[in-house]
Image 1: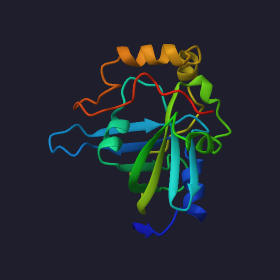
Image 2: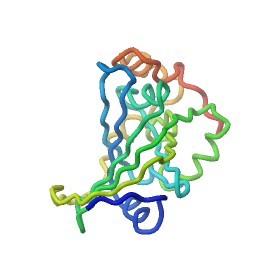
Image 3: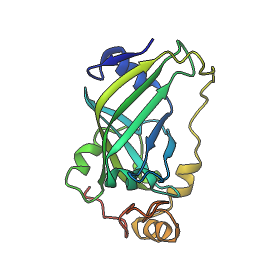
Length: 195
């Protein structure tokens, strides 16, 4: 049923890149800490950088749990599942890092996402994940569902923001600068972009 892979390439890479949604899971080190599971989407916001590294764009939202957990311990799992076609679930277990907008690597990383207008979504960081374990499983119990299109609500909401207004928005939110468990989250004010 399940198989372990040495790298993200071939059929595996094709499957991952074709999925319109994926999920991220992170947790703090504290045994009683809050586990976080988030859906991610928006066409063009995910990229396979090489056979062992993937990245996705972290956009404005109402919390920063993933960033906080990665800053504390780096552990992350990404998951894709087939809602159409042959059943399949792929998980990438690895180490993640938020690359903030003032990081010298930010501009080069951003070139891997040419098919999305990042100015429309309040880009906060690029999450880079180095795979330590790549596995797939059958996915026989995953239902068939049809993808229609991306929602336009996120872009409509955040396209009108600039750095100052985004920083003000994030400052008002309870779980942006720190996580639900009090870990450091997104640096505020929002770091200026290097590009």
